[in-house]
Image 1 (cartoon, helix red, strand yellow):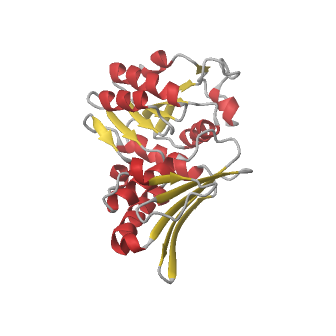
Image 2 (cartoon, one colour):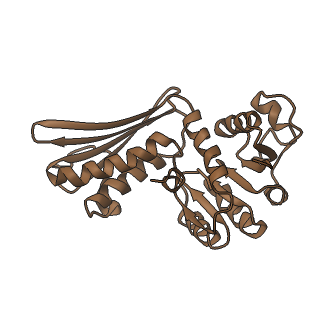
Image 3 (cartoon, rainbow, N blue to C red):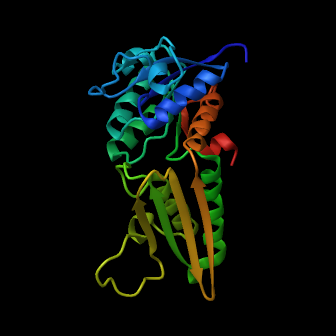
Length: 269
């Protein structure tokens, strides 16, 4: 590549943000030009490289995405639902391509992403792991082939600091398997069970969240049928599974037309 891709990271002081700073620093075809964090962040004014443990990069953490967006060709957003909405509106005006991995987005934030995609290319994915995005496809195929004689349950497990539940990946899995069976995920989903809910409805899909320790992210789709059980499982051992996908998306989005893209598009699925 003749010229480095200039990148801004939103959520730069978070766990994913720090790992992205490290990966970008290791790649000669990428150049970090902006690092953004929330207004109340204790890291504002500090060098992004120092926070990530990579040494001085000459890029200070700021809460001003408007200024940072004007310096980059693409921004990677792993901040917050509130921040993601503001960032994509600013990026649309600045002409910066977007790679968004924020989960638990509000309807307002999703609408903002859709509107921005008319002006800039946007990769929006709750999980940018290669394996998880293949899992979406495998789970949908299994749901379609096995049919409604097989009950579906989705179980996700994450570290004890994760704020949203169920995970964005679990919600995406729900959408894929429900769609494969012609069901509406808004009406067929059952989030956990307690009390006396009665016998399981054939069309329902259970979704369950577990929180504990330092677990990066485990997802399982269970197909329980007559006399057998099929399980499709993905386990992330480190955040590299997600961070490396975000870096791949940063390269892929270069030169793309405005539009809303999935990580499946990035992988050619």
